[in-house]
Length: 145
Image 1 (cartoon, rainbow, N blue to C red):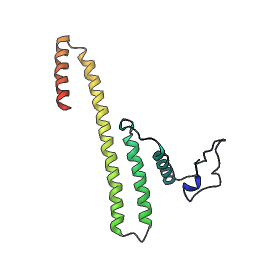
Image 2 (cartoon, rainbow, N blue to C red):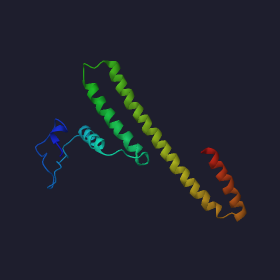
Image 3 (tube, one colour):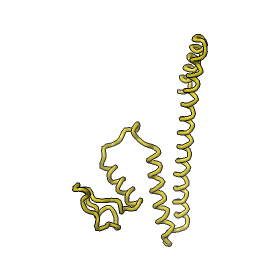
Image 4 (cartoon, rainbow, N blue to C red):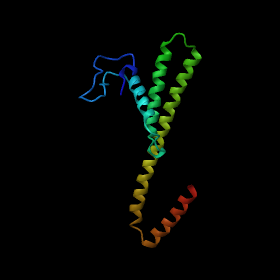
């Protein structure tokens, strides 16, 4: 059973079963607590297949974790400046990973659109020319893999 007292120090009195279920209301939790709760739930789930892994979601969650750590680190006077800089570099690194992921997704979507246009254009060519192109295109694809 879910123990809401372990979620965070900001536990509210409304942490009672929600709509008759055994789950508590979580709308009062802040983003950091929600990410912690997500991690706890995810750790209890069976291993996921790589094909089902959502890299965008994982990177965004990593960014939230890094930003939460950055906030705590920057507010703590006892943490040395070099460690604060390391945390800032981690946040910048995650942001860079997100940018690269977005660029790859954009390029993949653009390539799909170009291929769709190409296939429609091939339908206008004589069959022999279209088949010759498809053969060369398939050869090109086999050299890339």
